[in-house]
Length: 154
Image 1: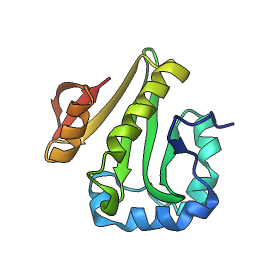
Image 2: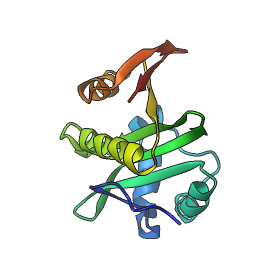
Image 3: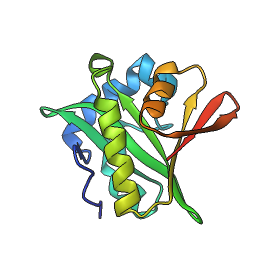
C-alpha cells in the first residue's frame, strides 16, 4: 500500500497516463530523465504499488489544478545507511516558477520524517545548470562529480 504523499504532491492515477506519455516523449525531459525501458504509461502507473512494496521506487505527481506538470520520485533505496535517490522533472511550460523547488523540498522533508531516511541524494548532469542551481538553492551538499554527473546530498 502506498504511503500518504508529501504535502503538495499526489500519487499517479490511471487517468494521468496521457500526461505521462507526453512527458516521456518530450525531448527535454528525456534528456535528463529517460523513461523506463519497454514500459507504457498505463502499465507503469498500475505497477506503482508493486514497485513501492519491493522498495524499488516511490513516485509522486506534481499537480497544478488537476493537471500533471511534473514528478518527484525516490528510488535506489538502501538500508545501511537508510537512503534513497531523488529525481524530479517539470513540464517545459511550468519551469522556472518554483514548482521544482517546492516539490523537492516537500519530498525531501517527507522522506526524512516519514520514511526515516538518513540521506536523500541525487545526480545531476554536470552540464545541467538549472538542476545544479535548484539543488544548491535548496541547501543540498555538493559531494563531487563522477562520470559527468554531480552528486548532491541532503
